Length: 235
Image (cartoon, rainbow, N blue to C red; front, side, top):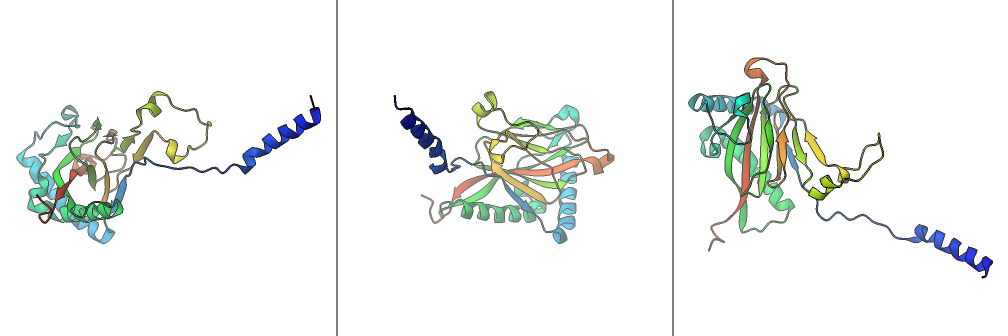
């Protein structure tokens, strides 16, 4: 055995990592789009939406049961608000967001991203929304109309089940890279709109605001989007 050659070979192997080309490639990202209404438009627009939602609640105080908890006071409107006049300014805003997403993702020009259903949810203090998805649609979204402090974050859950079942260990007291997060929370602010894949599990934490009466209600408008063939491309 030639000890000198063996040592030289070990040194050569030890130097290999310094010469390896390393790169990170992300192939399956999950998009969450965020849009913010301009401040000079915000107050009037949301005041009009609050009036419309209050009128809807007066007509249908029971509402429907979906991810909301009726027993905790959560109210859910019917699913066709986008067909009603008071919501048309918001429908136009969503349309602009749809154009942005379609362009960003290189969607086919023969299909437009359009609203299929749209509804309102009102969460008084103590209420929340269970984790859920939106079957039958491509994208889903939420627009925040009224958001008192501590009214409940929306939480998105990692769709990679195996990553939840067999999680990796990370360094304690050190922030993980974003690609290693298993949950993402957004604190709602009035005038913000989020649009996300309909298959992405999400829920809303309890409304813990200390504000009283209607000012303490968390009020949102949510919607589902699908691609619809344009008339010129319809068969």
